[in-house]
Amino acid sequence: MSHPKNISAREAMEKLVKGNEQYLTSDFHSGDVSRAIRLNTFNHGQVPYAIIITCSDSRVVPEYIFSAGIGDLFVIRVAGNVIDKHQLGSIEYGAEHLGTPLVVVLGHTRCGAVGAAINDNPSGYVKSITDEIKQAIGMEKDDYRAGCLNVVNSVDVIKKSLGEEYIKKTGIQVIGAICNIDSGKVNFL
Image 1 (cartoon, rainbow, N blue to C red):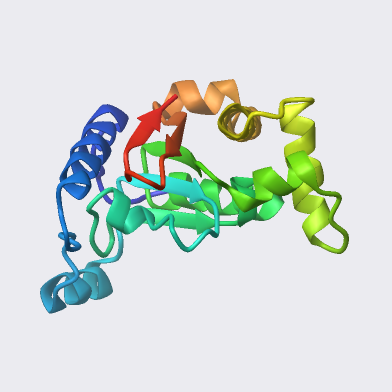
Image 2: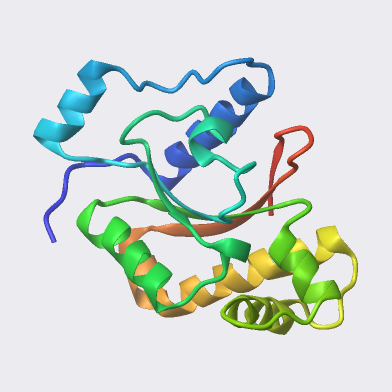
């Protein structure tokens, strides 16, 4: 698939780290949301440097956390940052059609979905999410460690889906991270 030239996964990671550092000391959003960038992405398309799969939690806003603007991040949100065929399809689109070199599964502290998997037995469609998380965390009861295990599981699912050959051929990187919602600091796993 032909797509615009993007930066390397290493450069994308550096942008995320720098953006998070900027976010930690900022009182306002510094990403480019100008009319000029809106028109540029309208006319020329998007070239996001990272695919971020994160929780639906309203306290976790990747564009803010990484000081990103319009067209910078390809964000996929689902409670508990669990991965199923819909998320995998979105990741494939970002990687293959947009040329995005980095995939980050971004979990967070005090995740309600992880907490529900540890402490509750929900019903309805929520159960499909907590069942995935329970499988990922096993018997872990510590909220932070369980969140990390859940992220690592999602990273593994993505890597398996993309395949070793595709990863090697394209140089795409798939990593995990946890956002501490009290400080905003992102720890890459």
